[in-house]
Image (tube, rainbow, N blue to C red; front, side, top):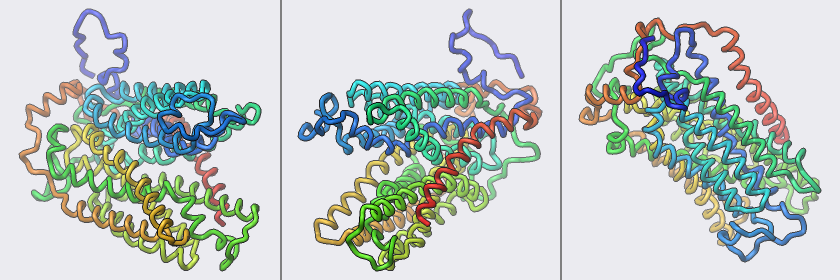
Length: 546
């Protein structure tokens, strides 16, 4: 490696977090980067499993009344009453909103400081936020829970989510989709590990029948901080000019090629129609998918109910039968988590062969068909086909997230793809609020109009199909970026200097060619074993559907 000139008489006390300290050495192997990214995403992926806390958080004060009549803001500081479930569920919306906001604000900064510093700060925010939230639960102050888990934790979510994206794309220019699929699969699968762990911890730390929510949040915060910090320190960035052995970047064959050989600056990207079209593509795909996630369990029970036990049965269900139906619905939730995670890896990898635009076409065409079929499966009492359709929908919901970074790299180039990705996932924040609100409002409207529960979701599902059709149209209009938006050679050189990419190996092609070895095996086992355990637990829960 070329020697790095040290400016100033004293080194920075946190200099070990600098990007130039993370440039891969000659013995590094690029297959060590994905498990480091997975370590971060498996931790922040607990966001999807936070629903396990809602009911326990509403019963923390035995014998105390519910905080009725105080309103949301009154509950934030109330101490002598139990919080309502709706008040605590807004924590999820808060950290999903902060995920998009923080990613948009600090995406450009992340590109310049590198994945180690950003990942370490993400670990501090997500882990520390959970600890603070746990303290808020222990003193029964809801505002502290929102501050810790929602606001500070949401910043950790946003930074952690985008931390490995640009790095992985540069390590795997030959398999962009597969590379980002590895990391973002972790976000989908984090709940498979975190949710059962949280349930187990709450039971083990309960006192006098009160679940140990506070202790569980604090323990998870410490564990997640340690794991994310290890992931952040394990990431290395590719030396400037590095390429996989025997691979050369494909030349653009035509002016209309969907894979650009040029880069667009993050401040210029949002001015292009391509940015907003892809923003709409993600927002519409996520709105439809997250609507199903948020209502999957009650929808399954409302649509099928007694038919799960005996076709044609109506009413008069015993408590045992109702419990069996609820267990089957919980099994569906487990399957959703599983297919959401696996779909991210599958579709992102497939996009390397199909192309990103074509992959999104598959999402929208298949999604429209499946959403339109769901009411039919419900009317006919075909629970198996209903569940299978939901699972396929969720693979494409997760696949949309995982394919997105590679789509952006194809359209806007790789130089600032992390920052552009950070701004574009504000679409997720919007969809995270719109999707659940839309499906709940449409359901309530149907029920007020006298529509039976089993039929109350029909118009909602057709509405979701229409949103996916709109997404299809937006995707169809995506074209290569006009060359007037390309970064000039001087702009690229300036950005590379800011990102310390001007520090290069003497021979970039000889750098980072180390073997996989025992370190690689240990790294993959460290993330693979917990994921496999979560997979086994999800499959056990899904067995209730059989």
